Figure 1 (cartoon, helix red, strand yellow):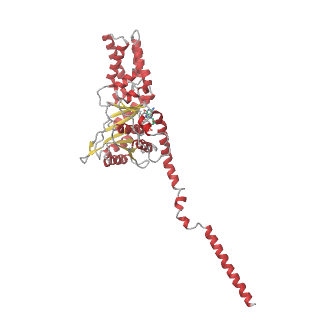
Figure 2 (spheres, rainbow, N blue to C red):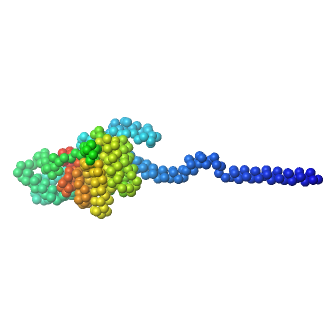
Length: 411
Ligand code: GDP
């Protein structure tokens, strides 16, 4: 009996032990097993990392798409198209480096884009001048045509006075003669001997060594500043120069991504900082990078907040001063939207007071009949128009050539 009791006790104890084991092993199974903890980061970390990554990449991808969608129809370099066959959509890692279209003769090639200005200004003037009787009323209409094209009051008066005088003295009445007179007078108004080259030559740094040419691109946001900086990088690369870009427009969220995309397409590095960061320190670093890389040119895109003149002055002035710690700034380009007319002139005035503008880029000339703004803005600032934007395509930025422009205007 005692033996039976002992056996039962032993059996109970043994059962208890076994069930305990089972329970504990079950418990263990329910707990996250320690080994999986090692691979965990790659599996569970994603909730944290992909979100950050997605946020960072979505706008960039969208930006890239936006730019490419816009540019594809107008891409002008046949070599670039040949080098980038459409059957390569799966190579997002290393963007192909494009070969931008040559810059010589761009304005002539893009002359059709000036059609709006051409119709209202050049053709309008020629039609009026060809009238049987050049009476007072006709001269007034000629004046109105010039004013409507934003030529400005004083230059309009000058042009009309000179034309009247010459038509009277020379007695010119043939269409060819009148066209030639108009051509000459428009050229006088625009000016043919200003230096319209963008100064990108190397400078002598404060340490006595050569440093890259430095170009600051300024202007109100929305005028096409970042796009112009990207297009200008292409112009320089097409001319055989190496370029570093400085994304100092930290005000507009997408600007740095946008600029970097432009740079990647032609193999130019972009120096950028945190969003909302200090534009001057990015500009400084960009020039530093340009020096380190022995680049030919550093192009710096700046933010154009016209909130207050002092704010703008502080910001742009600081960018320029800080860059000048390396050496001279060779060119300060003001980007103006030609479609904004008089408003653009007001902006130009404010910028000119804040920083020494050395050249003007007039964008969106393809979308306006107000090509006369070229005359007005040069008068206003005493600075030549050096480049004109004639479309959204990558190579739609042309060196401004007065003769080609006037010839396009009067057909
Ligand atoms: P930002 O804010 O001054 O840097 O302006 P963006 O460079 O982002 O340009 C604003 C818009 O103007 C974009 O949609 C550009 O494609 C467009 N744009 C720039 N230059 C030209 C041009 O010469 N012609 C036309 N039609 N659009 C232009």
